[in-house]
Length: 103
Image (cartoon, rainbow, N blue to C red; front, side, top):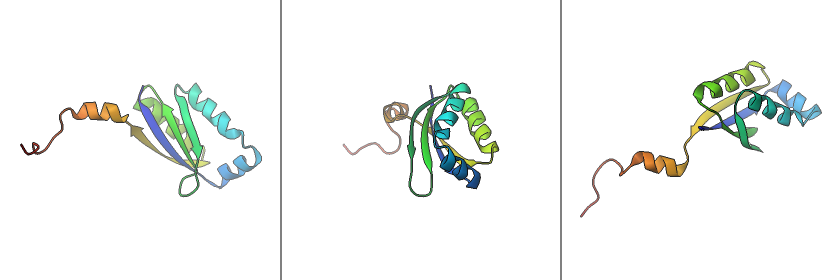
């Protein structure tokens, strides 16, 4: 299953909700899983982004629906990236591209 990285930043309403109900994070993760994905890992961040969530989804369409559904609530903004495992990435590159190594 493809892996995605979702970076999110809370808006004022999202921050207020989190302040009064910190368990809401787990509730949202359950909603993501109900939409057909699996939350593999999640971290709270200090800095520009509030959370990073690693999600496995069957395809980009499911991930787009999840990101759109969450953003439509108006409590957070997201940026979603496709993540390719390094070993898979190396295999995709095959023997590499560009100039041949010196002999």
